[in-house]
Image (tube, rainbow, N blue to C red; front, side, top):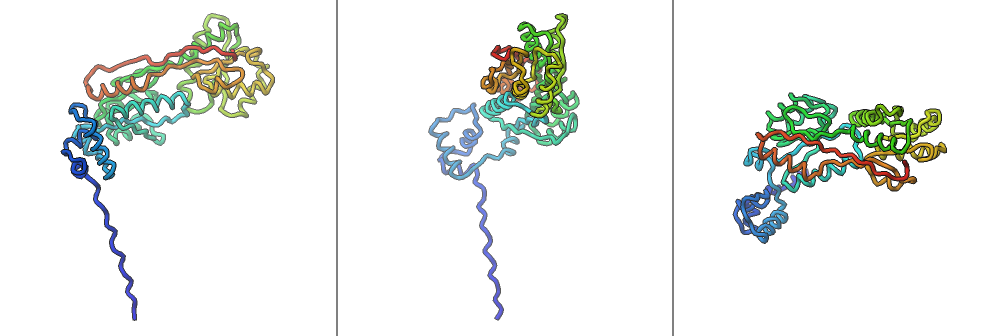
Length: 342
């Protein structure tokens, strides 16, 4: 007798809940569901009704369809932020987090996108494929053609963050030379005349480190003080090698690019018996908590970035009024915080 195996019953797949299901459960119209879940401010809806709609959507597991919402609105609500291809510190990370929260409150979806080494027009084409309504990108490798390509694909706002404006894009101008000028002027005012400037060895950071080095040179021009460039990888061994030849360099002051490099070099100098600030005054940048925990406490350049809320409002204005005049803003402030290390 041959046993015929039983065929398992097909798995019953439940259809995805719809806005009509949410409307029935909440006891409202589909239009009301749409107004509530799309955060429409043009229609006044009572708080109890909003709560019923959200509770019904949560109970049913209903999620609005982003593509359908984009078709109704005529554009997506996606703001694309290309993921940085260079190491970023806590200061930039906090800025990005604040910006994402502010855009979320304005009903935008922020997507960070890795371009896998693509640059220029190639990167812009990859971003355009996602059809974002806005793109926020460091402007170091973005030209007018790339901006035009993004706009043709439907991006209503292209905002660059960098030292120079790009034709066709809104620009948040960040003058990192101001950071170096503040540090150099501080060291000179403290009586230091042979000043070193740490230049990180990590690829990509030169877009920040070279302007900061130039800023130190600008602040000391015509004073007779000397500036020595100090290439340094972010490694304990590299810092130890630099500290071992410190006395031969004859430096009495150093600007360390940022607070993280300051902590790295400070420890190496202390291990080598170089007194800070006695032998060498030291100043970092970014005003991170680590600087307040070090001994001696770290002098630093406090950097003022634009608030996430202000930038989110700029993006929202540009999306709602794509034909409005382009905005150009100087957004990086630099002020010395004097502590024990200098």
